Image (tube, rainbow, N blue to C red; front, top):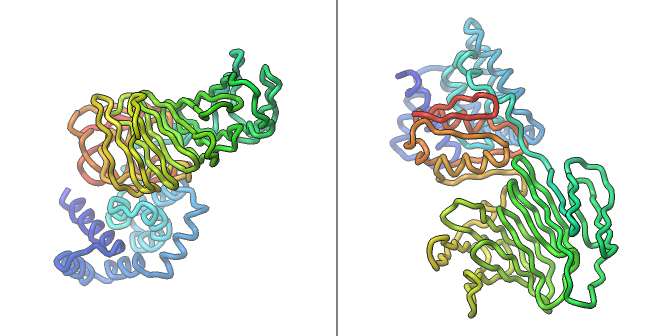
Length: 397
């Protein structure tokens, strides 16, 4: 245990050095470790070499973390070749630590942990999500959208809906109806899925896992109105004559032309609206009046239990990172983090001890790769452990 603590302490110091967030006292502690042996010095210099860092970052775009972990495990297992192992695993381990900026990963090439321990929790049955959804037409016909094959749907009014690879496009027939009559379609995205819609006005909607959008095949009248449950990122086509309105369970969001993220999953304390560009207004529970105005990099937290709407300054890109292939957490509770990962990786999560739900972590994960790195980071903090059985994960003290 003491060896674990020593290695993990040094891994934290090295990570802080990489991030430029190390204090004078910590720097002295790290220098003491470096001077203890030539192996320590070589390892430190390798990790902080700018040229190597750039090469690692470039290679990471095409890097498979599962393959790397297997390679690391095979090498570390042979204790008789320890010196050779340390140098060879660097090129693999550094590729994993750079995107996560995590002290826990550095621990692996400090501790020389046996392969049997590294492989104890396997995630080979856990796969990242992919584009898939269910389309429900106005007459109730249902179509599953889970491949990249392109084809057409025809609505009751003759509107042609084009399926283009992993998106639905309604802009092919954008003629406005004469009367304010609507045919509604619904797209439902299951666990482990995501999907993109291009509505008849040119607005693009990215739907996250366990989300649905109800919308008219063609817009008409004073407002372009849609109904959302779950989470979606909207890139709204500007039309000053017809504001775009998103209805969620306890509020309406009105915009002209802007991009923003809405998180309105059931069970949370707040619904959140995060504005990336443009401006929008939030109306609580169909209330009349001027509404609450948001500016870029502001977030509205709409309470489910009161009339409150709180506004705070945020980095909007963190809240929409999921649509760019990243899942980013910043000082969040383990339970909240795993709620997000459970929807995307289609897993079930349980907690043997209620206290571990409250542990807070930060980090980044490529959503199209293995869940393994971030689980290992949690465990290497020495605050929580986990076990995996199929697609079920159990956390405990």
